[in-house]
Amino acid sequence: MAKEVMVVTPEQIQANIRLSAAAADTLKWMIENAGVEMDEGAIADFVAARKLRDREIVDIWELKAWCEKTAACIKEVAKHTYNLGSEEDLPPNVKWAKQSFTYEFVDGAGIAIADALIKKHLVTKEQLFQQLTVSQVIKAAGLTVDKIVDMFPDTILAKAKERTLTIK
Image (cartoon, rainbow, N blue to C red; front, side, top):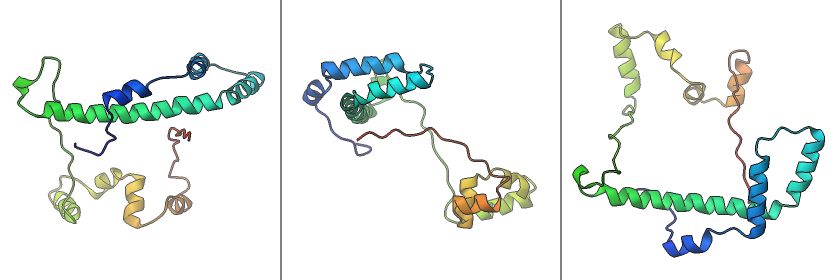
């Protein structure tokens, strides 16, 4: 396989994709309450109701994690299955996207290429610097995020990423 995935058998899928009645009821409750605006009193009631369903929520989360691993397995084996043969051998509903590539410099070549582009007046240093990300500058300078923010507090913005929910 192209990458390491958990191998899942059809028998395991049939045995594991099941919810207890309580977990199914909890999932229904979660769906009904998703995105609902609540005042402080309703939030307190919601949290109290959620606490009564914690075990079922963990069961649902474990099913989600198992399904993600199962989906990864199915994706990898399907890719391998359709990677053999030619385009003409594929069923009408199966297509491979055009092969794409990522590009990177051979060690140290980035500086030489940048200098050559500047000398040919194809780009300026300022134009190159405008393409740098905060992460790239931090890495190049050997700084930490906290240090660079302390050095330039008015010029570096912190944008919140989506939070990750972990349930174990």
